[in-house]
Length: 279
Length: 173
Image (cartoon, rainbow over all chains, first blue to last red; front, top):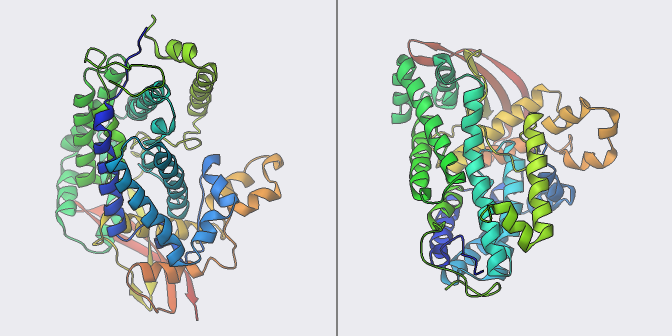
């Protein structure tokens, strides 16, 4: 039997392009390995994966000098540009995966919290494998994890009974933009926040819509036919999240774009051999 | 039936199959135990109960008596400055113990081996965080720092500070 490939290999360079743009945005906003130079304080979570680099003193060593941090920052950028030119370059993907994992650990360690940073290194995982079939199967596994990421958030909203409790979204809105209020900011985001604080039902409707967008990912467990629609729903969800909650998905969009390169089984395209590239 | 992912994975690679099943089992167990921040933390995205809370807390740093402002910075820098001030503020309040240290202290003695101490920042050096923080926010060269905690409550559709307390002051050469 000739197995089908689970993703469009010819579209992979656009995922790397997206990752590169996100990384450039991150560097331009003043964050990267170099940003932690001189910072002696970090606070780790309970994720043993995150402990490893800190136990080896790697982030602590890297934060001693700014130039030490700039090396992996520039390295990640150059490797990302290389991947746009040669999307299937396996060695560079492996390198990128390791360094971006270290960045994830360092960033979340110094931040002391996480939201969407995991996708920054997870996106590389399927493409570190040597054979096309391994990559295809790893891609499918990661796609399921991505879908689970959203479905579980929707599921917990449902079982915790918050969908029709208007005080839930009201309370979230009260707490989400506090630094803006302390700084007496009056930008558009604060304006929207004030408007929604008055409109508890409308605010809760948005909460329910976010639940719908998250649960849309459930369809992806049964068919790949609607992956692009799921992607669209999730992008709209993240855009609204950015505007209303000030939580940007930058660092996560390339991971989401895996849904865009996902191949519908009914589309043409099969693999020639178990070790070769797709036709 | 032959299209099932795990079945295809089993046919192709037994090791891959075992790894996938193990991952699913461990993840399910962690979620059932509400240890959702343990492995590739997923993000509940406001799924947990917030309705009981009616006020909010913000930590703010002052450098040379001037508040360090950050909300006008680009997203990532703003997030870094906002969150690290929050985490450092909590650290000061918790008698200079980071979250992981507090967490492991609440566990049986089995979890308190000396090796884990490498995962906490050295208490003597952490005050240097203020200098890094101020420089990051565009206030390099400051020598006097203080950490403030503000409590805000809703008043006329706007959150307003109702009290503030200085948690610590530091003078760094």
